[in-house]
Image 1 (tube, helix red, strand yellow):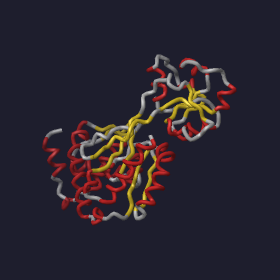
Image 2 (cartoon, rainbow, N blue to C red; image 1 turned 45 degrees about the vertical axis):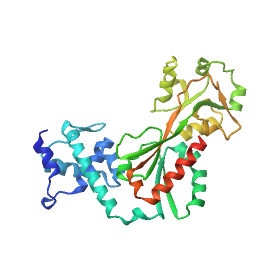
Image 3 (tube, rainbow, N blue to C red; image 1 turned 180 degrees about the vertical axis):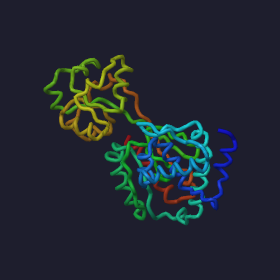
Image 4 (cartoon, rainbow, N blue to C red; image 1 turned 90 degrees about the horizontal axis):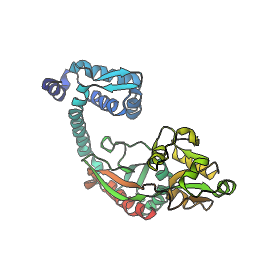
Length: 308
């Protein structure tokens, strides 16, 4: 792509029919890799997103995506345009924040996103305590293992297991989440003894489906296994946990999931070297001017490490 196309993108005149929603649809399709994913993200119909992409390609005179059977494949031109598009998006969002009078209010809604286990196990007691301290704040809790985009206001605050790399976000490490192998005591009572890691391969295992993390963990220990080694495969971590509680087999989960259930026992404690997962609290830099988001961020930053 030449510089002319970049300038055409940045200097498109709204009076000539340019629509900002075209850029929003372009960025959503770029990030999601499909029209369906972009439509879900933007809460609009898939055909509408498709028309937006086609219209933007027509206005710019370039091809932005190759349509494949598995979704959208961004062209080199699209990748080069992305930086300029994100600058436009950031400017529009900053304008919206500046025009909004909500920044100075301590009352209102804060949208928090967290992984499903964190949202189910760790956050409810914290939010109950926060309700007593901050009764004027309402919480929208998004339980998802997908990383929400704070820059697009899909959430105000995120609890993440990876550090965000966007420079416009503020991130604070809360601590490390220890992970171990666990099973119901009834399962262990009826099964053969477990003395070393290789013994696990003779047991009923619970693991991920599309998520390869547990398979990679076994491979790192020198025990390459295939998905066929697992009696139950699910990428829903709560499904895995409930299968462990039902006595189906041995699963792998955060220590905080098991510590309050006396029927769930650790397997090979201290012998399995499973790396801990860092937990981060991320927020947009708007926290510096938004009292409501700042007080919720501070409450979570104080409370979550105590539960880890």
